[in-house]
Length: 131
Image (cartoon, rainbow, N blue to C red; front, top):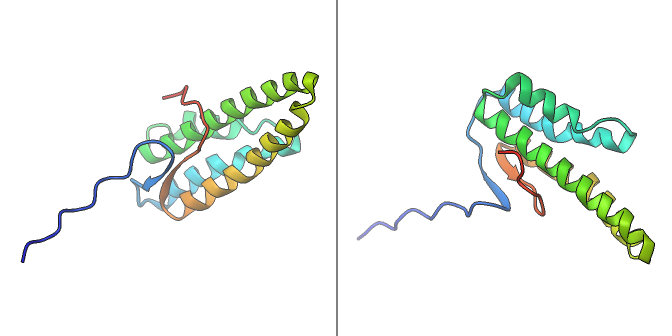
């Protein structure tokens, strides 16, 4: 009997990939990088949480990936929100700003849960400006 070849790696981009680190502190910091962005809902600077984590623990590859992904998500949501505000002139923006707001609430929670489970999560519809 011949053995089956191993499955191909998951595609780069949307979705999730196995987490690199088994260090609990790395996993915790990566999770906080995603959860911290929810401070935006309170009118605070939610983007500052992943930025501080990136600056302090950016030498850890798993933490850096999560913080960069979270920052890219925040930049993308800012662009989408500005676009929605402009679209309010033609009334479509009232719908799109609700969708953007819901997306900003749900996706960091999904990312935090996946990260806490040991998965390297990548947000959909995100501009990857920071590498």
